[in-house]
Image 1 (cartoon, helix red, strand yellow):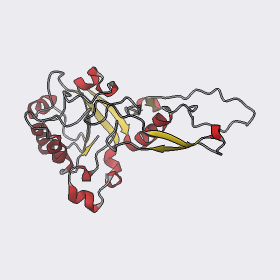
Image 2 (cartoon, rainbow, N blue to C red; image 1 turned 45 degrees about the vertical axis):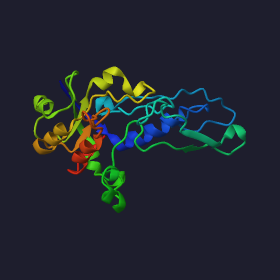
Image 3 (tube, rainbow, N blue to C red; image 1 turned 90 degrees about the vertical axis):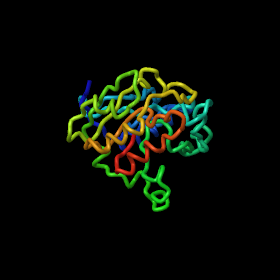
Image 4 (tube, one colour; image 1 turned 60 degrees about the horizontal axis):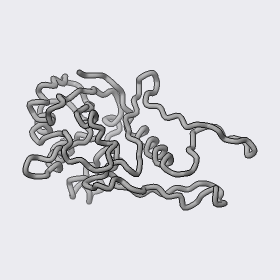
Length: 236
């Protein structure tokens, strides 16, 4: 099953990251609204939408919480937001500090993630092509009992010309992003599936949840990630 949607990954990701992080503090949630008078009580409730523009944009970013999974740990993300200056304590404004791994929650990999020469040369996420990261995307359902192998990629019959694909897998059904402990049994891309995608499609953006599957006998998701990034395919 395939569905056409539109993604605006960077605007949504940056806005969602900040608002989601703010929601984890004990201070009142902030909204983007006109200032209220000093004597007026603020009883507003933040509105968190997933669909914008009558279906033109879908926000599929995950809300950041202290209990969301973090790479190879059973303890979850833990505290990632601090409020060193608070209006409740007499400061003129609320100032937050955030510290968390760059690969937490919804994110996109930089070219330098698994290539050291790219890292040294400064290939960060801001070197990625925004024309690739924004625009219509095809949402496909992966067979629930399979990793994304070359055989599975063939069976999905993704049309030529499609540049952005989001792969919906068993991981979503299992709610892995809502579990504190990082689960290594997730479904994901296998190396031959990534190779087949590179050689046989026009895809320039891949979205999956999570991404590279540990190869049997060797934990090498970097091989899958590298196969895509080396071909200048953005991986979200």
